[in-house]
Image (cartoon, rainbow, N blue to C red):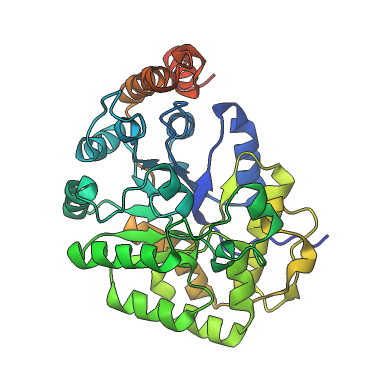
Length: 372
């Protein structure tokens, strides 16, 4: 089994998922095994369970200077049909900043999210939010769309089928989602957005380039989506030329998750390192996590990017858009927010608040904010 570690130090991963706070040891093991210096925990909130943000706040509290936190929006009021009240999106943004979070994570743009809450991002519901975030210059990591094959039953990969990520005529289309984003960016042209997974434009570099040219404040991250690596490996010379031209607009990411094993995390990050740094032709290792698919799915061809470009992608671009290091967490506010989210989850779903991830994190932080 071929393992690959980056030759570059000080890497910032702009796209990581934290599961339960009980998986702290695994996440730390993945970070050590991959050699990644700092991680950005993109934290999708689930108001029904109280999970998503609390475990990321926990890691930020426990390991200052190591974990950035991008907090997801909480649509409890909409998802409950108005049975509960929650802060407005503008109030949530102010609360996210007061906690010490570093940015916002948006999943509103993934078709599965649209299935749960059918409100376009162009709806008046979001208008004050967009204006406020633009005014603050707060960075957003935004997942919009999915791979094109998810709309084709004959092409959708097995791992996507298992997660019900296949879409049909009843679902929002890929082009409709792109059109909505265009309207938002035209209305709020100074939004500072990092579009996750290369904005799912890896199969059309001409369009990707036009999009970056038209919107100078946005960037793409490299969290795979294994289709991104296969698409860009189809013409490695053209892909390398794109990366050289837009070196200042690309942010490193892996989509690492604490639900993976340390070995899976090492191989996932290693695939991206090897693709960026070498001129190797290789396949996904058998030990990689199932979301990358089996080795026989395709070839990955490395781009052998120069060191100065690697430094931009691995850390400088993120620092320019966010900060060189994470903001300090307000522990007391974090405890209070976790307790609020636990109570909200109980009101929506009936799950006892004490059993939620949010309440568990609040108890741990109250007991020993500096260590367990």
